Structures are given as structure tokens and as C-alpha cells.
Length: 103
Image 1: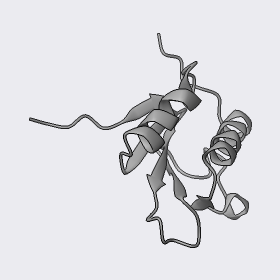
Image 2 (image 1 turned 135 degrees about the vertical axis):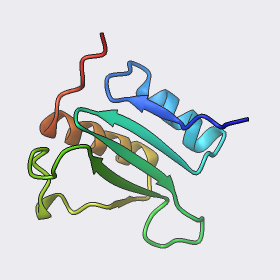
Image 3 (image 1 turned 60 degrees about the vertical axis):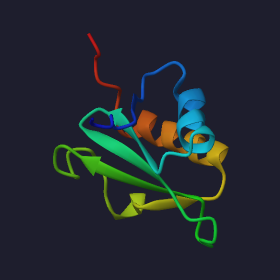
Image 4 (image 1 turned 180 degrees about the vertical axis):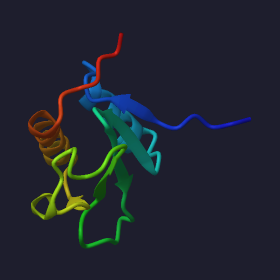
């Protein structure tokens, strides 16, 4: 039996709700969000971690320069609060890349 990776799309209408259930409800160790030309991965951090409860990484399918990721983006990012993290991820994705077409 294989376990399906938790993957959402940045264009999902219920993205924040579904991410909350995956990360905070059933407490899976990570979640991946599909964006244009890459993946945003959110990892749960151990409760004792003093850098944040969540670690966010970006994995471009193309070169980082094509996705306009540079040293100013400073990935990975650490976040303490779920709401702040999701707000920042959505804003970053809006500015850096438009959602894929899901036809």
C-alpha cells in the first residue's frame, strides 16, 4: 500500500482550510503546494524548536532565476503561526508566479 503525498494547488479555493486540516488536524509532517514551475513545501517543526513551528521551502522545476528567486527571498523561511505563514506564502506566490492552468 502506498501513501499519497499531501499535495494542494495554489489555485485551490479551500487552500488555507485544507492546509490547516493536513498540518494542524491530522498532523502530517509536511504538505506540498503546487505553483507555476515549482513546489512550495511546508514542514512541521518539532514542538521544542525555537526557530518556528513551520519550515517553508521552494523547489523550482526550472532554474531559480527563471522563477525570479534570489538571495532576497531567503528560503527556507521559518514561521511560528499558521495564519502568518499561509498569508505570506499566498502573497509571495501571487507576486512571483501565477498559478498553472489546471484544464
